[in-house]
Image (tube, rainbow, N blue to C red; front, side, top):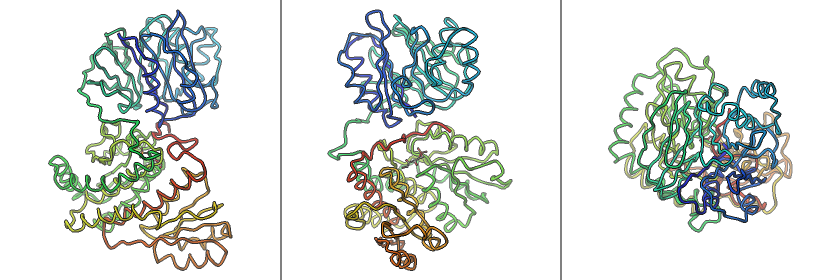
Length: 561
Ligand code: F6R
């Protein structure tokens, strides 16, 4: 969460504009406030604003010729959302400015240390200690990791010096990209311009100073070299392909993703090879642990039900942050972690526990350069391309589909029918689940078995983008408590015919019900039955005047515990 973008260039043209463009792409990481810092007219200029990058851009009316600029888009963790609390934060004497992602865990200890040095902080934000400690360290700044505890990445710039200094501790991503005469610093390779040809990924405990064309790396205070890796940017962020939101574009990509996944998981040599390797691992396993957060947890829940039935192996789905060492028994086990971003801190922490038990970890992940992908023995790609909307849609579909294809090869007929049915469900989604004439006060979504998990995921999607209270519930459980909440302001969405009893109970209390028939005959096509609820959430958010791509309080890549 939080996006860092920086540029240092021999060509001092449009650097602020380019920084803002980079930040705009990183906005999915947090968008409650933003800011930039650069040297001009012998001054370290800081411009900050509450709101998204457009708000910041509105405050910038000059494009001076500068050689370096750093920028930040924030998702507040400590300190309210105010202009003062947004990044960059500066040292007490305004000499050093820092943009930062992560949490400084020994904040209080650092504050005490700064106090002893007569340095008073201006904000409650942990970031502010970094420029001040850098000031104290001066020529020993590569020593910074010995002072700061926690997981963080940051980038700093100093008054009258067109150098950038970067540091990373822990798992958070930070990349340096280069083209002819410019270096770009970014929290995500997605934000690197099309001209970038090579990339360096910062490693745990790295620091790096960039002066002109020269990069000097240290790891844990020892000099080190880092290799440039070839890079080819294929992502064009501004391209919503005619859709008004990324969420709509991404839902509409699902049939094409289904086709791609089915083809590649049958035909691509490397994927077929790792699929076989996975199946071999399964042969000796007594228990499978599936882990994920939010939507990825729902994908895990669906796959757990499918695996138990298909493989006859005990399979447990865990919310990543709820897995404890005692959950893992001393028996031959396999763990499968599911993550769109590959950077989710709760899932990474859960991987620490699993690794400690020497259980092999397989990842289903959409970002192959991510930390989760790198830390897993085998990573199965979800082949969705970048997912920008905060609410995960196409990747949920892909994770469940890939999960199914790992354990079984299907008749070609089933593949064709799945693609056909996915296309049809998308086409008729608004007919299957129409918007109600009036805004409901509360929504219940009910189902049984696999449909119950679809209900959970539908409810998450709706509450995420509409801010309405919405709950997914097992159909028969409604009468054991939540039925007390049902009245004539309730909308219920019932997945499948086997919810009939609950439906009549809701109707008897004045609730309105929309039935969605669910077809589980085709073992793969059922996944697409999440699409009407995804589109319902999107349309309801738009009808309420909300931006479904950027729900309040949320960010796409949750890199804090
Ligand atoms: C919901 C959503 C979140 C994520 C969760 C895990 O639409 O996007 O619930 O699914 O934060 O993120 P990943 O999959 O990146 O680990």
